[in-house]
Amino acid sequence: MSDNLNQANERCSIIVVQRDRFSTTEKCIDHILQNTPEPYDLIVVFGGTPQRIETNLRNRYGSKAKFIFEPNFTNPHKARNIGLRAAATRFAVVMDNDVYVRPGWLAPLLECQRETGASMVTPLILETEKMIHAAGNGFYVTQDWGRTYGFKELRYYQKIYSEGTNLKRERTDYGELHCQLVEVELALRLGIYDEKLQDLGECDSGLTWKKAGLEMWFEPRSVVLFDHPITVTHPDDVRYFIWRWNMKTIFEGYQHFEKKWGIDMTEYHTFQEWLLKWNKKLGFFPRIFPYAWALWLDLRLKQVFGLLIKLILSPLSLWNRFVAWKLGFYGWPRYEERSQ
Image (cartoon, one colour):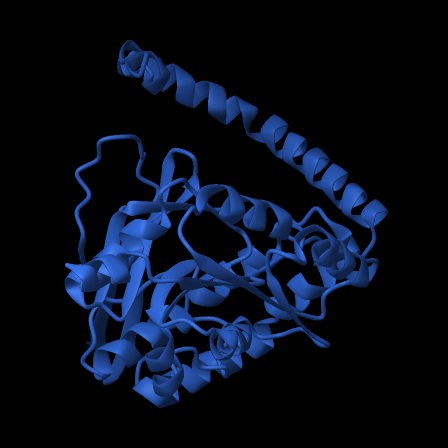
């Protein structure tokens, strides 16, 4: 009984690393401070941080967090490993700085670990207040013409989320890197966070845990929100975003993954299309002029372009609405009406 009580009160490290942007950090830390009554050590590891942001973070949270600022932009996996080496606890939650934790998030992760013996536990991750990003993950592999292809599955991706779901604790093939609880010593010893990967680390980590014969679990009672970026809006984020999602660097990581596991993760060569779309979250002008005025101009141009597209497509939209009306589409109640 006393051992279980001691484990329930066991101190945990929370390691925050940068993902896409610096500008989400304060909101991330504020949510941790507000929603984590359990004992923990907060470690923040960033690289190439603008001086203004570094000074502000130290002034606001210097007594509440240990900051490790590397001089140059840092691969997120490298930042995770730096944080794990700085941890003085048996377990650590490793999370990106665009994740906002909800009340009661930490205890279920630790409880799941105690009851399952898992070496990695991932929470329910939302991408809006009422939309799921991932409720655990599947890893699908198939062979075609002598080549092995791997595909990521985000379980219940973009399904509506509310209170009283039927989600259950279950094993998972890997965990989203947005937030996961890991056993510190094992993660370091096994090389769970491969620093040669700028992207694709979640699948690499899952395969590494699995190869070692260790279990990974999804815990739905722990809920966090991933701040899914629509566009880059802060000038302090521009240079890092360009570096972080450099297509050449990411492709080199994919080649490393394929050599390491014998699996092609380009998802039948469609991944580069996704990567191009993701890079378009930052427009052309801010890439040349990383200033607030260029971001403003880029946003205005996108709005004008979007309006032109609507005007061009409006006759087709009207025709589609007419067809929908004739088929009885508008006789169904809207979601907002059902939820009242």
